Structure formats: C-alpha cells, structure tokens
Length: 408
Image 1 (cartoon, rainbow, N blue to C red):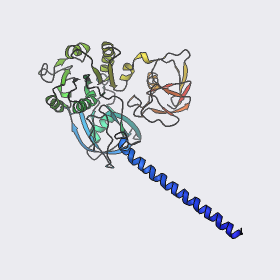
Image 2 (tube, helix red, strand yellow; image 1 turned 180 degrees about the vertical axis):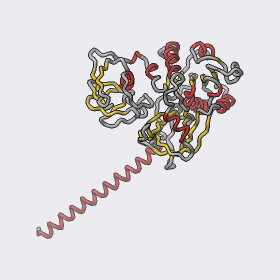
Image 3 (tube, rainbow, N blue to C red; image 1 turned 30 degrees about the vertical axis):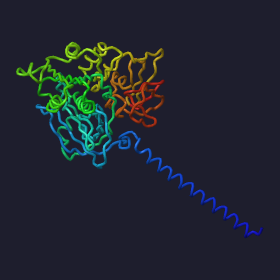
C-alpha cells in the first residue's frame, strides 16, 4: 500500500468517527429535550418559579386595616413582571432593607413578615403593625423596620424580598377541625390559613379565636365577616382584654380577658382538633405550654412566635445536657462560653449571654442569622429549608457538634 493510499484510508476512518460522534451528540440532545418536555408536567407546582437570593418588588398599594391606623397592608408586585411561585398560607416573606443608623451610615436589616392572604398569581400582601416603644420603657426607640414601612414605603417604593418560606402551615386533614388562635398582629398568617382552608375544604370546621385589646385593633374585620356569611362551618370568637365601655358583649367582643384553656373548653366541641397559634411573647409563653398539656402529646399544636417568644415555647424536653461542656467562642464579641446543652440552639445561647445577633424567622427558613464558622462544626436536628453557604451556619436551628468558633 502506498503512502498516499494509507493517508486516504486513515482520513476516511477519521471522517467516519467524527460523523458518528456528531450523530451521537445530536441524538442525546434530542432525547434530553424530549425528556425535559415529558417531565415538565410533573414538576412540583411553582418550583420552577421560586427565586434564589433577593428579588425587587414594587409597592402597588397600601391600606390601613384598623381604626387606630397602626396596622397597614402592603401589596407587592415583582419589578420583573415574571410569575410568582405559589405559597402555603402561613408562610412569610423575608424583607431586606438598607437603613441609616444614628450616625447616618447605612446598615442592612432583615425582617420576616407573614403573608396575610392566600396565594394570588401576580402579587403578595403583608400586613405590618407599627411597633411603638414598650409601655414600661417609653425611652426605648420604636420598631425600626415597621416604622420605616409606615413612614417611608408608599406606592412606587422598591423593596428587596426573599421567596416565601416557613413551615407554619395548615395540614390537609379535612375531617379534623382547625383551631386558629391569634393574638394581635398574629392574625396575619391565621387569616391567610382560614381563607385558604375555607376555599379548598369548604366543609372543614374552622374555629378562629382572635385576641385584641379593643376593637380599634381589629384587622380584616370586614373580610372575616364575609367568610362567616359564606361558610357555615366557620366560627369566630373575638376576645378583648380591655374593651371600650360600649363594646363588652357586643358583636365584636364575645369574651373579655385573654384566650385561655377554659374558654377553649367552653366553646370547642368534643373531639380531636389541630391547633395553630401565633401571637406576641406573653401570649405564647402563657398559652402554648398549657395548651400542649391539655391536648396531650398525640395532638397537633403548631405555633409561630414573634422573636424571643420561641425561647419559651420551644420546650425543654428537646434539650440534651452534656457530660462535658463544649467551648463556643464568639470571635467578634470576644466571648468564650461553655455550651452545656441547656439551650436548643445557638441563637438562644447567644442571646442569653448578651451577644446580639440579627435574626428573623427563628425556624431555619430566612437565613437572617447565617453566621461564618471559624473552626468546628454545627449540627441540625432537622434540615433547614434555607440553603446554607459553605463554611457558614444558621444559629437559630443549629447546635455545636464540638468546640466551635463563630464570627459573631
């Protein structure tokens, strides 16, 4: 065989191999496209619409919900106009703002606000209460973020949001009555739950207990009355702690005082119930433990607490006392402390020792308390829903797996 013939033979073989490779590649791409199209209809609803990180939303409308003008609803539409992922009633949005401090320097602050209505395809709604200074400490500043929303956020304003998150959601057991217990602005996730439950399961019994100081603090009253007219299985008991003279015993005050176990025993029928509780720290501290004791371990009691209320309601039965304390160092604060296992998470531990940490949901969903790990490891009893960056941890649901150094 001549050199020229050999070269031609080799060239032919190479061309055939290249053609085969191209054919295989095109076939694989076509198969992948067919598979993607076939699977498009079986993806979890809304999963392809959720976003990572922050997304810009424009305020389209704001409405005061109470006579005292202290609780305002904000309607939020995505700036990019893309569809919104559906959420479950009871979940919340995480808001991130850059606000000036006392020196005029900007600092990033994060807050979580419950979605206050069931899902709509084009907008979200949150209802925010203006937080005044504590009544016993008028020298303290009012709520930073709530005040900013009330005073500076109007139609056209842009805010940055994380996607809906949270595990405080209604279950799908239509034959077990749902008991929704709200204190003050804690009505926001529970109103959304009531509206969603009655829309999806109109025959399910839903009882709403709503505690306020007086009728000036009632929100969503017109919408609640409309639900009462439309759904015969919906029951509402409004409890006022300090009703105005003309209110006691009226249509907006079925009981005076606080929401307590004797009231629930008197109104609820016999049988199983699933309980959902959301309110301020004093209510959570007094009601959740006795409610759990009353209904027993086999019943469902879910709750969403505001800030430090989770310290009380988390329950001591989930702690693990250690034979040898672990050393936890907070490097920026210059504190080295002993972890004995008395707390259920590092956020509670830090706060008990006076170490300030930004926090939001306190349930592993919003990422506000995400902190860099210097050395060591953090363990979680349940996998957080927030995706944690490498080398970082969530203090609100994490505990040290050994000696630990944190950048806090």
